Length: 311
Image (cartoon, rainbow, N blue to C red; front, side, top):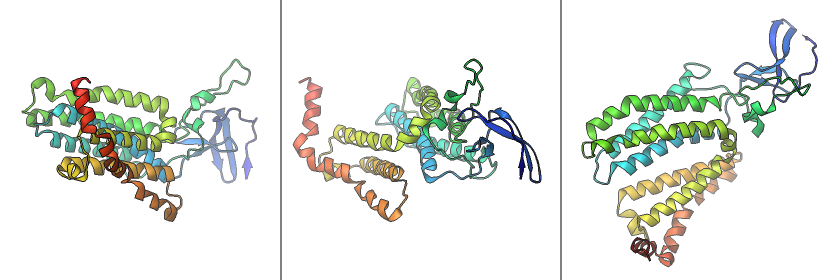
């Protein structure tokens, strides 16, 4: 195979784009930025991303997809009030919005029209921040080679957030106006207003810290799910199994946290060796059981009552 010989390509992410191919002859352009959907190989040639995402990549995308849904649920619960019957419908609507946004995002991604995406493999942290690795051969002129080396894990999250926001603005106001009759006019749309704040925050978080989140999200899930479960059980004054079983809502919260525990464990282990990693899921109920066994020593209800009385 005859390949056009050109000077060496500088920079970690600069590559040569294929201009012409005729049989065994390949002619490449000058060293520069690779087109979208391609990244450089070891020989500094731009190659199309043709691999399927690994399990860990899907788990990362699942984590980023869960963030707006969990925040929706939190603010819906926060502003709906204990006597409001609209919270359940709003929870279901938020779930439908995020699910529809995820499906649409997959359908519009390459290849278009199928629930499948092609991607480039993440090799190291710097793959997420190619803008920091533009070379300057003469220390004066910068060769700009910024491209999405982790295609499409970086941009697909922004597309998903955009669809979430659009669907929320189309569906949620109509639903809230119809069913949130028990709330005041100023309180009905507060969960929607909250989303208008946290979506830009999530976007900036992905833009700046996407690579860090990719490697840290399993530990973030475990830590946050443990902390929130402990806070919820103490705030609800759950000190034994009977307190836990007396309300269905408490069981739903418990099982939701167990699912998050399992998600974090699977993400950390990556299930490389199924027979060795699956037994780790037996640790999922451990934090809740530990809390119930030790609650009698700490007495959360007494601490909460003392805090309310200002002691």
